[in-house]
Amino acid sequence: MTRQAIIERTVKAINQLPEDKAEEISDFADFVSKRYEEHQLTQGIQKLASDSNTFDFLNNEEELYSVVDLKEVYNG
Image 1 (cartoon, rainbow, N blue to C red):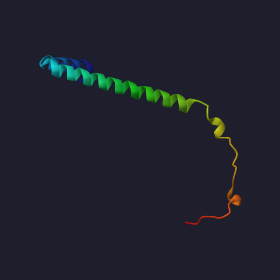
Image 2: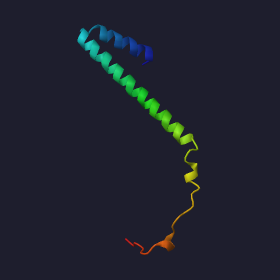
Image 3: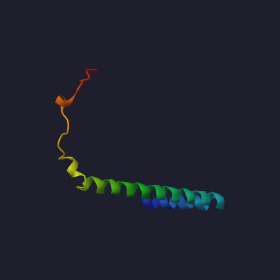
Image 4: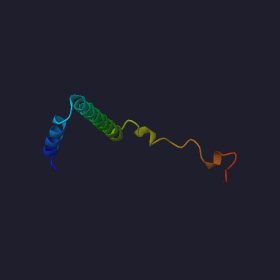
């Protein structure tokens, strides 16, 4: 089903409902729209963070401790 057909079917259904039910559908559409916008924003932020080089210095950090530094070795 095309986007236009979905819109037409939804408008037809809303026109047959009482005003309070049509308002509920409008509120739900607002909710879904805001949730989608937040999802898109979150994905954009995650992409920016993963593409940035801000924390690359952590990848080159030298090891501070080794197995030799252990006082006791756990053999679980």
